[in-house]
Image (cartoon, rainbow, N blue to C red; front, top):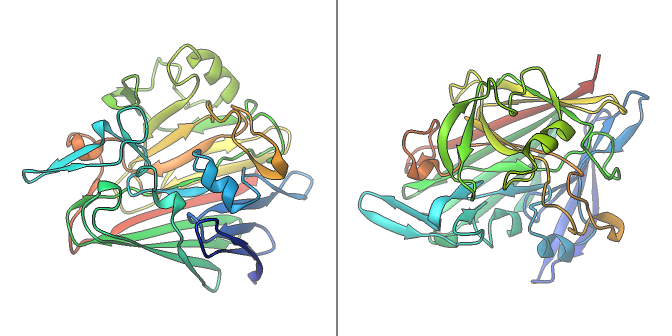
Length: 346
């Protein structure tokens, strides 16, 4: 049985109110905001049977609107980077919002993370919807988006549908920052990440893909599992200052869910396994999180959590050779499905 508990709404400093609701199925529980489709809290049991919150969040609408880390939000219209903040198709050029170095990151300054979504109840979760008008942050076409969060046993399902009336690249991802030891812990460097992915994207200094590279023989090989600490050490001289790389999903066919890999925390015993139908997963070790305001007025620390972001590949709308289907055409339906399974290390 899934229980629902509405919480007192927050005042939106831009006007109106932000709805909040807790969904609890007895194993997992999440708090969802109408602002940005944000998952503010996610409670999961540890190896002592005690539930604890394992994602980072904020205590007010103002704090969420001030930070630019996309804490717990839906990133879009296009997650990750689009080079030069420019698109072109059928002889037409589009200038997007340039909000990160020379690029459009996560849909621009006023991306989906800052939008007010409509929220309604399902039997096992919530459904959020959003209308994004033609020209929003420079993106072409009127877009309609539907987002479902559902709790089934020890699984969180994230399903996103979208349509547009003009050709437009769409890639939406859930941008939670996970610390499986508990969100109040100051480091996630002890977490172990494992993935069967055999390829990742090499990038330039601004994170734009330059090639598809095999993980074998590189510090980014996660097949046997690596700690975030070892990845930080191996990559701290790079511009990313740790892991911030997009991996290609193994066995991806665009329809069925494929197992991407696991994140596990030795002390709490919690383990999260991701299954997705998306062609890539960006792993980000919160290498630049330092100073972002979190709950209880506490400033968050770099390397305090890890993001595992299923998505279309960065800059794929401009690089046709990359895997996936980044361009959505009128009459088609964008479909993102991811399953986050929470259990214990055996």
